[in-house]
Length: 337
Image (cartoon, rainbow, N blue to C red; front, side):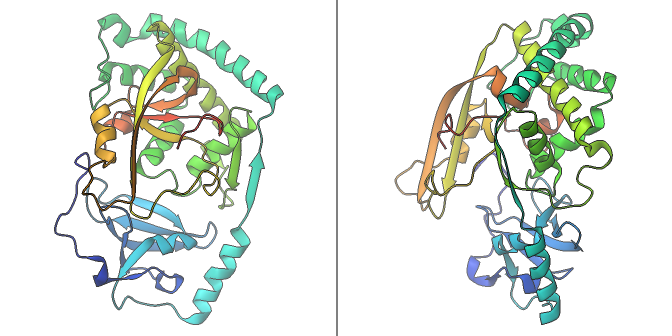
């Protein structure tokens, strides 16, 4: 885990108690049950969306926050003797969880897929023309180092200018920053995924949005569709101009409890990969003396059409986390993990 900051002096688990709804009180300190036990504090409670706001108090994202579903409190540990809610308050939280427990299934519609691909390809042609006329990256004749931890700034600047010219920069900024910080935070990324599914680009099986305002403002479905088309068009255009049809990506992972089988795992909409072999290796642990139950490290050639977001064009992937990341849309049949 050398890619990320880590507190080697963190307290052992026996100094904490398991998360429970009764501990969802503003001001309580708790830490995530991830490998490095990321610490934070509960800042507020949102009854509309059924989220508690958890502010991170250490590591790269110190000061940032996640909006976590009430039921997600079970993934946290609390310092002993935390402030506790009364029975009536806990019952109210449980009732809200039940009200928000809604799942949806959106299967790929081939007619919608064809329409969406035609729109993306049409915009790709426009993006290619725009890049040939305006790209500082192409004019500089720069080369991309796919084993670097950071993307080429000139290409990121090109993408930002392209999104600004199409009045989509704020949508891009919010999508990328949320994806990098925590895609499960709030409804924003889930809303993008649902719209992608409604466009026929990927099957979605999972929770519906929770907040009554999930599709308001720049989050409207119409604006999200426009954003998705332009983002995919730019990516496909730049790789086409670079004469690349596939990219080589890596993925590493460890588990303290063991991986679920493919039948046990919920349908995954997209997954995070890296261009950088060293980063993937840091996310895995294959030595025989490890305490992790399961670990893997894989390499795969991915078609450009499967890419949704990469560190090459995305500013947010070049700030606190330098993972040379790529977000990949793989069908259930294509997924290995």
